[in-house]
Each structure stands twice: as structure tokens, then as C-alpha cells.
Length: 283
Image (tube, rainbow, N blue to C red; front, side, top):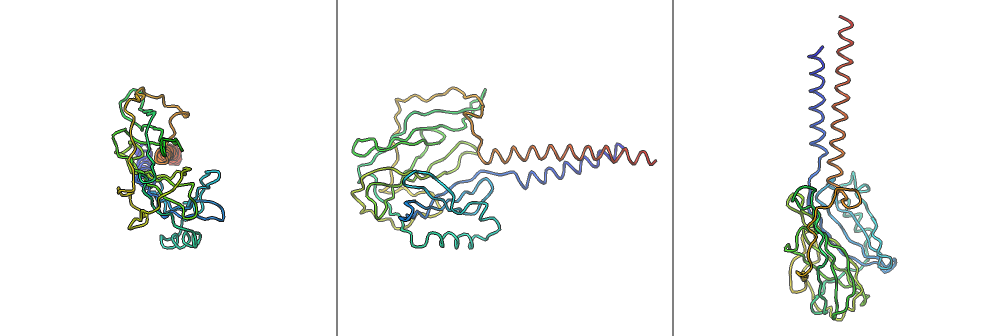
């Protein structure tokens, strides 16, 4: 009976590791590209491609220029079962007739960006840095015109901003941030969009390409922020509580896989005991 129990248990463990291999996720970069404006609903549409987590195909998202609410137009779930070609066909059908955003020179529009208020999150009782949260403050002609949180790893990493203008609007721009988003697995490029109220006076810069599924390229139009070194970062470890550490999709998926593995192992152990007992009774 013991041999049967051990055999069933080993089979269960083998299946568990197979499931873990199939479902465990790895990190990867996230790119934002194909920026288009739809005047009908005053929204910026863009394609987001994440090469980590579930490994979704490109998805279509939009930002309302009125409420700044971000929502999915074609989500990861909706693209499941489709080929890459089918997904791009769907995206092109939705955005047909929308106006491409054109890249502008941030410096020529007197825009600068500062990073302040660094808050470093570490694993408790360890020096491993989870990430560092900054506040990006956007200035035009020394007037603060916007601010938003930025997640990175350290102040000395590369933060690259690109500015994009709406062809029919002169009072708003889209800022695209391209930087290493966190410190896990050495960190991956994470790109994000932010709508800022700004006076666009110079749209003369013309890039040789539209933003595609690659990191933002540094040029005379892009801008790296100024880091205020006199702002002392918070180096105290932050307790691992739901209020201040929100797991990433990768972490959630890994935790779920571990739970599934434990449950499967327990089920096979119980089956082994029951099967062994039944065989022993027949004997």
C-alpha cells in the first residue's frame, strides 16, 4: 500500500510541476505605440504590447482627454483565440480615420521635467529594492503645468520622455515615458502615457518614424528629467501590507500557481491513501 501511495503522490507532483511550467509567468517589457486622436469622443487611442505576464497579444486602449480615464477598447481577453494579424485588423478597423499624433520637441516648447520625492520600497529585513516611486513635475516657462507618479528602480537610471501633439489641439500634449519600471529580474522597459495641459507653439519637429513596438528613441525632441538631488529618498523598508505593496500581474500569477500546485499535491495524496486502503481491503 505504501508503494501505491508514493507512486500516486509522485505522479501528482510531476503534474504539478508541469502545470507550474505552463502557468508560471516571466517579466517582460511593455511598449506603447500608434498614438491616434479621435475627436468624436475626445480620446487618445493607443496600442499597448506587454511581453510579460500572460503574454497577451497587443491590446487597444484609450485615454479620455476630458476625464483622463483609461479604458480598454480591445482587451487581452477579447484577443484570445485570434492571430496577431487578426488583432491588428481589429485595431485598424476601430482607429480608421483617426489622426496620428506628431512628435514635437519638448525643449523648443520650453518644457522641462523634474523628478522629486523619491520613496524607496524594500523587502522587509532585506536590502532588495522593489521599486522607487518618484513624482514627475512638468514645467513650461517655469510654470508647473502637471505632475504624476513615476515608478522606477533608482534615480540614476534613464528616464526618457517624448512629447506628442494633437493636430487639431494646441492646449494639450501627450507625454510618453519610457524607463525601467521596476527592479524585478533586473528590470524591464515600461512605457506609459500622460496627458498634460500645455501651450504647443512649435510643431516643427518631424520624426522619421512613427512610434512602434520598440523603446522610445532618444533624439533632439526627447527629454531626460532633472533629478533633484537635495531631496533625500526614504530608505526605510516598507512593511509588506496590501496598502503599500501591490503585487504585479506576474507576482499574482506566480502565487496562484503555487496554490494550485499545493492543492493538486494534496488531492493526489488523498487519492493515494484511499486507493491503497481500498486495495488493502480487497486483499
